[in-house]
Amino acid sequence: MQDSDEVPSERDVKSALQFLGDPSIGVVEQTEEGYRIVTSYENAVQLVRSFGEVVQPPEEEK
Image 1 (cartoon, rainbow, N blue to C red):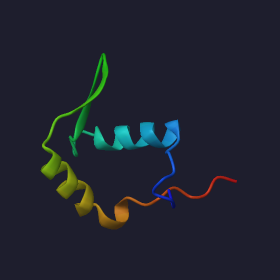
Image 2: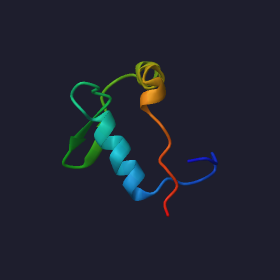
Image 3: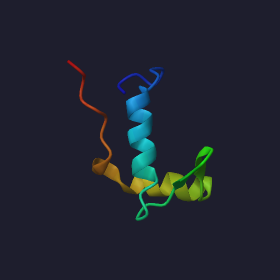
């Protein structure tokens, strides 16, 4: 997402949740009712920032 006002697509949100829900990351977990956060806000921010270049904006769709 180039523009901070741009709303992410459903595909992008699902991809992000799957990434954050990976057991090695453990920021969210999937339940019957959806996803829930399983860490503190501060820890989540620190963890995502530590990914650096691993997390990149998706390429423009053609």
